[in-house]
Image (cartoon, rainbow, N blue to C red; front, side, top):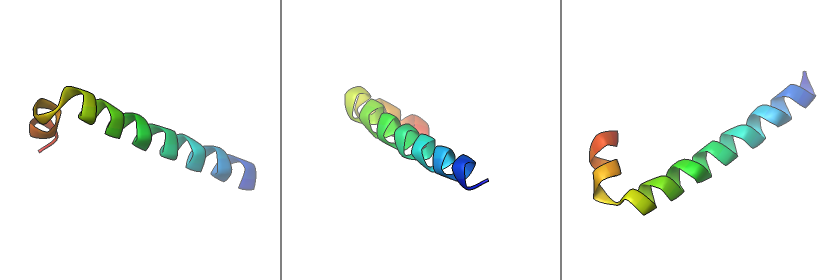
Length: 35
């Protein structure tokens, strides 16, 4: 189970960084949709 938790944490960090990057690239449009 510990291995799975590590994988989940890594995936979460990856998704967070990808989402932040996409918001930066798309600009205010992505932020408006997120709200």
